[in-house]
Image 1 (cartoon, rainbow, N blue to C red):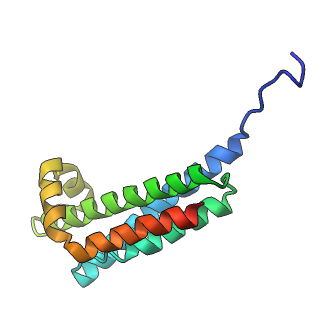
Image 2: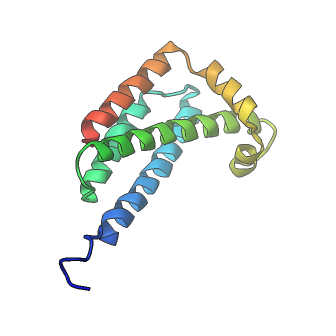
Length: 142
């Protein structure tokens, strides 16, 4: 096989480094968001915008290929962070008074119950923050 017939492969570091930084960003921002929400006893949905900017910055720093794919990856990571944060906030608010640690309460919270709690906790202002975060993720993620 000659060099010209070999298909150009994406270097492993071009996929691994952005993926690892993205996972770190998702779970790190989810932890910060959950702790802040529990401290102030509010949803703190405005953190979703900061999360979108943070994830876009992490992808840029990891030299992920620019363009629409990076913007959609940023959007997906932002939505995943919103979901994980809302799940852990609901789980800790339900499990904490019963004496359950975070890991147990997150595992025991069912999807239907979590969905109901998230819909009750998120008012129109929070949904507006999530929409702004989605726009910021697409804009900064390009």
